[in-house]
Structures are given as structure tokens and as C-alpha cells.
Image (tube, rainbow, N blue to C red; front, side):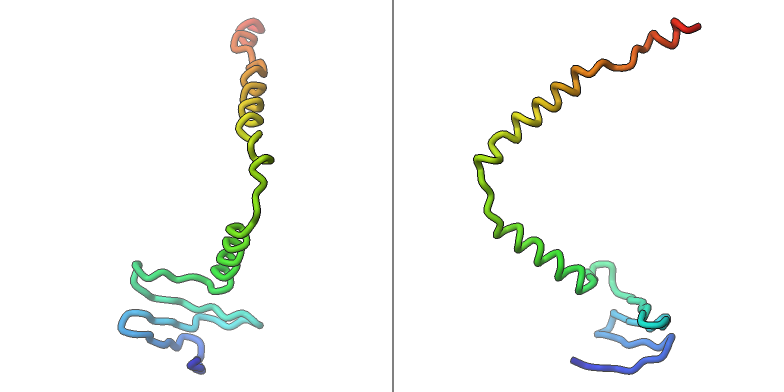
Length: 97
């Protein structure tokens, strides 16, 4: 790992087209600005790591298909009961006049 010391508004250049500038230092937080081509994907390492780990856990989770077999039926019942709920009477406002 290359370790550099920078002051506010100083920058480093990575390759020919990625510039990282130290913008601000407050307490234990450092703000940096990254100038890079739009085609360059830039991620926060900790966020990406968390997403990858969650995806790996989800992919390795065991699913009981018997428990899932009723999902379609349950969704249809919920939709049916929602369709049977009486809608607001459109003529009620006219009756008051």
C-alpha cells in the first residue's frame, strides 16, 4: 500500500485520468473529491463489502419450498379481499348538494 501525506486542496493523480483531492478535514472525517471518467465505477469499499457478504449469505440460505408453495395463493386471496372492499361512493358528494 502506498501511503501519502496531503494537505487540504492538494491532490494525487492515478493514471492519466483519475484525480483525488483532499477537500476538508473535520475531526475524524476527511472529505475527498474524485475526478474520474463517467465510465469508471467508484464504490465505497465498506458498502460494497457489506453488499457482497449479504448476497453470499442469501445465496447460501436454504429455502423450504413447501413454505413458499402457498405464497401465490396467499397473494391472490389478499388481492381478492382488497377488490371486495367497497370503494368510496362517487355519488355521495352529489347527494349532499
